[in-house]
Length: 89
Image (cartoon, rainbow, N blue to C red; front, side, top):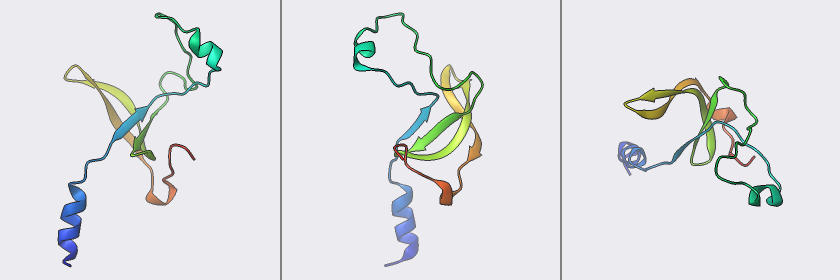
C-alpha cells in the first residue's frame, strides 16, 4: 500500500480537543448540595496555562483568548511526543 495514501487517510480522522482550566474533587454529598450561583474553586490560579487534550492525551498548554466572540486557546507550549500521556494517567 502507498504510504502517502495512508497519511492522507489519517489526516482526515476527526479528533476531540478539550481545554481543561482546572479540576476539583468533591464528595457526593457536596456535589448534591450545589445550587445555581455556587462557585467552585479550582486547583489552578488565574493566569495559569490551560491544559489541552486530544482524545484524552495531554498535547499542549495555552492561554484563554476571545476571538470572534468565542473562547479560544492560544498555544504556548506543545508537549513533545515522548512526554504525551493520557488525561487519566
